[in-house]
Structures are given as C-alpha cells and as structure tokens.
Length: 113
Length: 113
Image 1: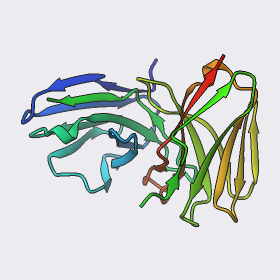
Image 2: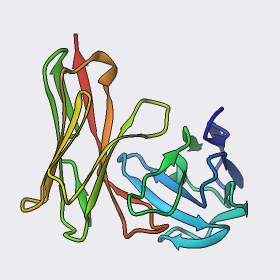
Image 3: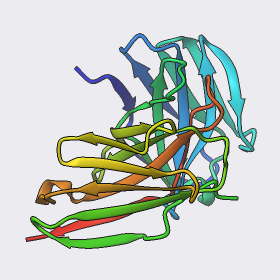
Image 4: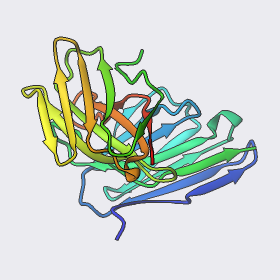
C-alpha cells in the first residue's frame, strides 16, 4: 500500500496545454508539498500546505496552482504549459516536526513539446 | 544561493570498499541534517540523519559524521554493495514547521563489481 502516490507518472503534452498532477498520502500527515527537480537535478520546493492551508509559495509562476481538497490530497494544476516546465514533480508529506523528514511519491515526469 | 552543497556530481567505488559522500552547508542555523537515497524513476527515500548535538550517527553500514566548525558532513557506507548505487541527497530543514527541506544537488554513487 503506497504511502504517497501521485498520478500520472509520465505526462507528455504540447506547449500551451493545461495539465494536472494528483497526489494522495495515507500516512495521516498534516503537511504536503510539491517539489520540482529540473534538468540540473536540483530538488526545489514549490509549495507546502498544512491542513489545507497554503504555507509556502516559492517564486513559482502563477500558472501553477496547487489545490488541497483535504489534508490527504494535494493536486497541482499547470496552465499554459511552457517548454521550461519540463521536469520531474515530486509530491511529499510530513508531520510538522523539528526533523522535517519528508516522505516522497515516485515523481511525475512532465515533458512539454 | 545554495545553502547545501554537494560538490561531487558522481563517485565510483569498488564493491566492498568504503564510499564517502560529502556535503557542505552555509547556513549556521541548520541544526539537523538528513540523507536521502534515490533510485531512477523513484522518489527520494530517507536514509539516515544527524542532529547538531552529535558528531556521529551510525545505522548498520551507514554512518554520518558532522563537523559543525567546518560546516561539513559526510556519509560513509561500508562495505559498499551494488544496491547502494543511487543518487544521494544531503538535506536540512529549511526553517522548521511546514517549510520542508533544503536539498543539495545530489551525488550519483556507482558501485562497481
């Protein structure tokens, strides 16, 4: 039973399209995140939500809109996709704690053509 | 500005020998560090951590050493096994709470038979 699951795992789409990536966690955690791993392999935080409330919104274009219907789900919607959006997007969850340990999903590889 | 740096993109080690992965940090407020391991097409998974009140933490074949004065930590794997071939990320809590982790760029460890 996967702890943090995200779908789809692979997504190939054309520039200008709108797409969504879904994430669900069954760990009972109260915080969820979206991270982006770009071509340079950096893992950078995009958003964090705590109990459905947006906590962190890094300098991400407003074409990216996270939505948290409940604390077990955090979806990422991307409008007007651009070539530079091609990356692997990781969902993660955690309990708010001193150690900050994150549990990651398998990643969703987005390719924009 | 990278607060967590892993300056070796890759490292090749013979099976059975010791693997040493290095990490430097610039933020003196960091007081807890984590290592994550990532296989291709999978999400990062937690490996081992260390608090700044310690200078060493050991878990089986994995040991992490922390040198606070040098702002340096290292992960030792001994003996190295083929299954250890992966990308290893060093990370630190970004600020606590729901701020997530700040990651290094990763080191690709290759264990040669």
